[in-house]
Length: 195
Image (cartoon, rainbow, N blue to C red):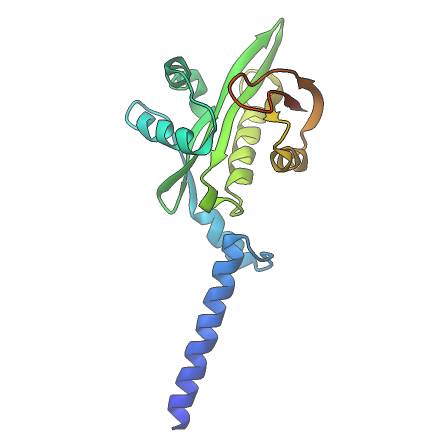
């Protein structure tokens, strides 16, 4: 009887421990354990965009974003020059997000415009957005041609996205009136981070 009780206690303890780790990884509780952070980091990977996975990018974008992107957008993100700045985001080998940037030249300055970055709703709060943005920022700062800044637009109703970017060192530099034509509100904050 004692051994049976001990086995049950051990199973219950293991079960509680697994639930704690799962909860921490799901982002519903503070992730205080370095092990659970390592586990989450090791589950995330990135893949370059190719004609073979472009359909996956289209599908993810149609679910994540409230606007439809043009065929030109999808052809442009396949540009080999952008390979390091346009990625599919995977969690446990499942595609769950995208990040797409483009270069813009103004005079002698090269800027990086973050066109889209998003993760499917069930996979948010697992550091996927932070890891994706950190990858782009690290790549931009180490890029062979000097990138002066990275900037993006955030719809003025999306306060949580604005706070996310501000936590990563972006600053609001203005409001672009009527930036969005087909969704309301139409205005967007302009956020940027200089290198």
